[in-house]
Amino acid sequence: MVQNGQITFYFNPVRILCSSAYAGWQSVSQLNEHSPFSQRIQIALAQAKADYSKCFVTLPEKPAWYVEKVNPIGKYAPEDPSPEAKIINESSVILEFLADLFPEAHLLPSDPVLRAKARLFIDTFVSKVFKPSEAFFLFYIEGSKSAKELLEGLDALQAALPPSGLVVGGQEWTNADSAVAPFLIRMDMMLKHGIGRYPQSEGLDALEAWQGQRFARLAKYVADIKESPVYREVWDEEASLELLKQHPLLMKRK
Image 1 (cartoon, rainbow, N blue to C red):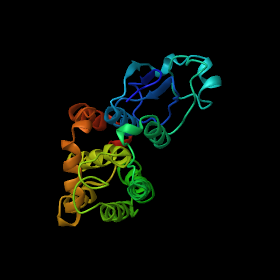
Image 2: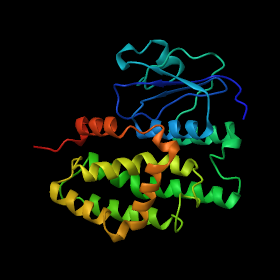
Image 3: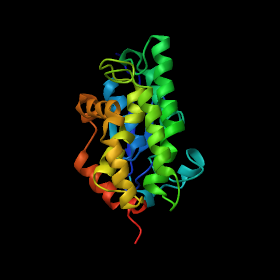
Image 4: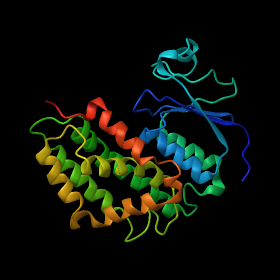
């Protein structure tokens, strides 16, 4: 595999969530090391065995040029990129970019049917699981159906899995696994440790369902993810758990 150009990732340790980055043949991406969106990219880079460097930055030190050149919203603060760098936003788009940049890594399957299956799995997660999970863990509203909707979304995601192995079968890791794994691991952790805005009773009910026969296949998939060398390379369970416990949006209301 030949890599033409430099890849630099900028990590902001202050923020919890981040989904913006910019990349090109001189690839520069601004990420939060423990964000699930950032970990999508870290996993893909590990799978591709890409040569890249990391740079940690602090949000308040954002340079003036950043808003003009990179992100008009002005949320993040990497160093001034080379004029040759290309701006790309959204972790899902960057995953596709890396699949094109490192074809020999097979971040997407070469078989068109399996490639479509990988993309459909990501779409199922985004359309059926992501929003209900936010509503349940982060923005719970009393009397809402977020728990029911989350479990139904997980039903749909489980139905999209093959009988065994990762998303496209076997142990071949693809972008579909990279895109979903960081979120499923966090859901598993938050339910087991009672982290989130949901009421305790609903959390216990959701945990019982999550650990029961209903989600046996999805639980096995999560277990396979945890044992994958490429995921273990970027996952720090202890640090991630502490960050989740301290996240202001995940603290129980008094």
